[in-house]
Image (cartoon, rainbow, N blue to C red; front, side):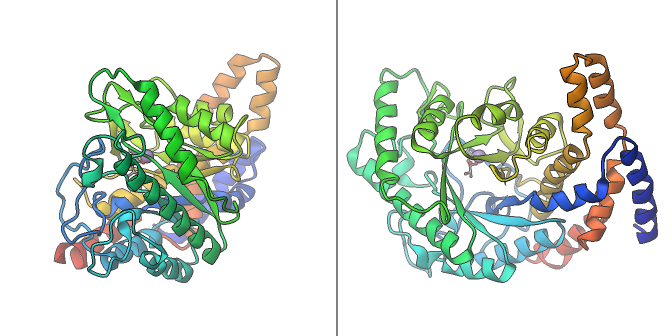
Length: 421
Ligand SMILES: C[C@H](O)[C@H](O)[C@@H](O)C(=O)CO
Ligand SMILES: [Mn+2]
């Protein structure tokens, strides 16, 4: 795309938005506050590197597809992440799962992991000048095969996972300390039942007990922020999920924790965008897993759809950028994974840009004066405004390919790197 054309289109767009009272230069400055935490697991189909042939199993989640070029080692993953970051405007962090440590060819079980397994990532993040986030991994493990981890009635299994959680928090805290930016430590467990359980209460009481034990050690929020991710149901756990939204929201409010909202984890008619302002009345911060559920929690690549737009708009309208930690959660193994990553992340970023380009003050004024037709009409007209010209200029300012130009870069990377794996 020609630089001159991008600049000219931006100037015209700037005028159009200015007529609505929107300062596009200020919006581009504000985009610096939109920091997206890249989920490392799109590069390798949630496999991890505990063993050379590690792959996703259990947990009620599934990566489908077999497109060539998956990252098979930490080196390959870092190379891929480097490419992804090269093609994204703005600022990012990296979100790791506990199975992505450096295990030096040894068997290091989940209750044995320590900072030394992640020091390499911390050093990498220092070089990249980026922050790290962290997740315990409560699936793809024989001790998760029963369908229960932190809520297990087998005390040995429950204690094993509590120890995993404690270690994840230690690792996360060290990441936050060394990198000078708090690590968001997220806990998602697959625990639940295929068929109707008798003892929902018993499992939930055990989960509460495990969380109390796992969180026992106080850690400064300057280093670590604990989040919990609920879910409606998973494959094989259709009748009851122990860590439901009610459960974690209650726990988060009572214990000053973060609530993680994954938009694939609710009934299809519920909107995470609607939940943000509800939750933030009672918790200080939230974590998002932005995804695209297609008929179920399928974790398709994020696209610029209404659901994602509402999430972004709610954050922008209320300036919640310092209270909502933005993460992604998708893993498509059926297409070029780097392309999937870049397309999905850019879609989320575009939603934030569109949100910031909204003349919110005007809309609010109409709303408060019950001028609902005017509100509706302007919201509709905004959809036809030239946000694409502002997006391309944002890419230009950030020295990354504008518009569709990144497609050929991904193709080239496939040719020179991915196809050789
Ligand atoms: C791999 C992730 O931790 C996982 O997708 C989790 O966040 C989730 O959303 C499970 O459905
Ligand atoms: Mn998730």
